[in-house]
Amino acid sequence: MLASLPDAKILAGGQSLGPMLNFRYLMPENLIDLNRVSELQGLSRLPDGATRIGAMTRQYQLEQDAALHREIPIFREALRWVGHYATRNRGTIGGSLSHLDPAAELPGICALLDAELGVQSAAGRRTMSIHDWPVGFMQANIGEDELLTDIVVRPWTQPHGFSFLEMSRRHGDFAIAGVACLLAVNAQSKIEKVAVSVVGVSNGAARLRQAEQALIGAAYTDDLIRGASQEIEQLEAPADAHHSGDFRKRTAKTLFCRAVQNAYEDAIKRRPAQ
Amino acid sequence: MTTLHAVEMTINGQSYRADIEARMTLADFIRHSCGLTGTHVGCEHGVCGACTLKVDGRAVRSCTMYAVQADGASVTTVEGLAQPDGTLHPVQQAFTDCNGLQCGFCTPGMQMTIAAYLEENPDPTEREIRELISGNICRCTGYQGIVRAALDAAQKLREAR
Image (cartoon, rainbow over the protein chains, first blue to last red):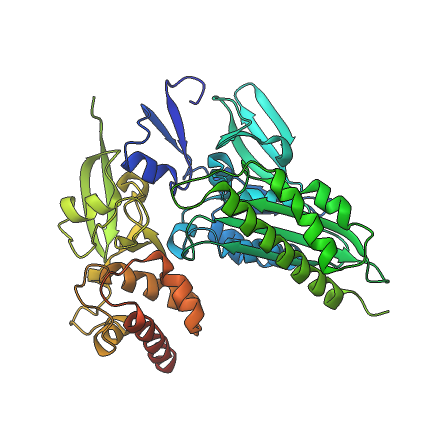
């Protein structure tokens, strides 16, 4: 249908597209509703321990899934910030990734976990890393005749701490900035492995690779974290009527320091007793 | 070109059917086609929460869902909250007791949101309630009475169990 219908838009949960249509912001000739495509819904476990999430899995389903919460607890933490209770009952992970609002939480979590995305068209299926997904402002690396079908995430196998922090004017509003962090420590309390992603200060789904490199192998100090947060300065943060790009970056840097500290303290607590 | 679609759904236990355009929102269907005007339409873009109702047991915004998507569904609106004999739902009673409403515009959405949530989380904290109703805008009350009403209703519902 996507390949044959003129000017067709995919309707997932409709929590972003719905308002855009109501505003006549978009007036597509055709809407293709995926809400009754059961193959795109739900979570399944792959043989290697990864979790495959169907693109039409609703945000509340991710929030309530006990196995996902056990293995990747940062999902539930971040989902609290995704829209509101009633919008999470409709909103989907695939819709969130495809819409790719720079402030959206789920692309940030997918980047944190190095998610693999499955994309399908009448011509066949391809997979790509989340890191190749954003190609511009609210623009995903997907053809007009292609559909995001699934997202594969792998939990970290070693014990680790996590933190998700976000700043917005009202809970559930679009984030000014948000930071997600996973962090593991070794027996000497040094940072062994760390992943940090930010939302609101780039085109979405951005990992802070330089900051991660600066932290790995180091002992935790406030100065180290503050120094690492400087990578955020290099990002091109979008500005809007409420917040300048600079304000978003300053907010993100503060959140970065707090999130890394939280994740570090959490990692120390969760480290197995020696 | 306007194609009409036959849609049938159960609203508050009663069956409704109509031939409608695919673009008609569930909120407009319920208000205009079914004449159930308890569901209020505020912002019409999923921000204010006034049009919240339950579809197959889950709270959703009826302004960002199309009526054709609810074909075959079971819908509950604020009209379906009270008992058939008029006895108010504990959430409605608590709104009355705690001054949880003034002009009443946001009230149906507030009550549907809170009623649905309390089925999932019967013992919420005040913080959880504030987070919950962050998706529902009220311009009169300052929210204090609504938060009190939600906590009061939660307690009454727990006691009734």
